[in-house]
Length: 513
Image (cartoon, rainbow, N blue to C red; front, side, top):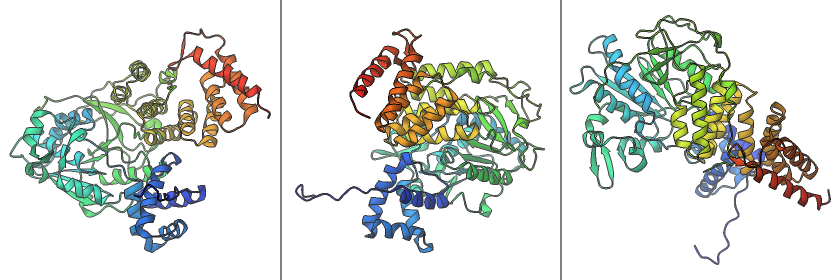
């Protein structure tokens, strides 16, 4: 580019334009974009405007017409779909599938009939190839029965990469050296999946919002991990209904650990297998969902194992809420299940406290590993989701954090931590009016929180609402008065918060209203 040539003006989306595009993309993909992702959408839009040589209004009009479907797909590829994943992403699920569930299904199914697994939202192939490797490790070679892994995704770009089957770097972090040498071939700077693994997987493009094809019937296990976190609640519930209708009695559903069905769709039964929390369509389950209080958490004992970006100040969960009495657990009969459910309230509280301590120490990734041991099931689920959202926010994964905080509020609209997190994120991204709304809701729920008052004061000041900013700075100082100066307020020194409030009050006193 010529440095003397004036650059093109930055693309600016008006709120109504953003809403039209967001709604059109959601109707196609099921994914609801939040304003926190508007910069990604703007970048993708700029590329498509240059490629189509259309003005913005003309392009938006084209998207909403029947002839614009191909362009909708192009924009979804650029601005909506996230293809980042790794092999063996959820290690508790890995152990549960290889050591317990695959051997159990092998014993139950008729001889020579295929054992079928669906990777729904397979992205660039790491998940279905992981499933193929686990089947080979569970059963050895030659396989004692056919194994069929059906891998689908909305993105043709991701599927093209998946069919090639070459990986490098972070994608292979969880692959052990023996697995790498046995199931991959070195190819330049990458590792290519061997044919014995590739031959078990069939890739196909599929939109999960569309009717399922005939190939979907006869599936024993569905993996749909970290696909639905951006779905609106109604879309998520509808997909779960379709999965439930598809699976046979005894079939299994593996979701991402923040994709809880509690209080959303309870026809599935939550079970614990080797420390992993999995949903099953248990024999004799109701054909339609019952009330949330009727759901049950049970455990399946293990069998012998087979072959081998930050957001300070950080939020703190209200641990006391995690110890609330749990609904009475009704006895359930699942093959191999023990009678005593695990993770009683005290253990859940301990996990909350340990995860919080890790977050305070700046170890968000370690906190997420620990949180993966929590069953997001029961009254503690919204607080657990809010804590998961906080961990993602502390890592800089703001879009995921916002999605998880919103899901926490869908489960319980009184989850103060979720409103506080949304307020902090939106404020940092310049969405000040939305930030103030969320922080005001948090203050209503917890009026004596100094942290909420402080963030409200900062947000009001940036909104030029100087009179209410002064009031909230004073409220913060009042609420901090009983606390020692050397104590911490969710990881931030109380003395620093006090000094900031006092400094801002002096500056605001010099400005006319």
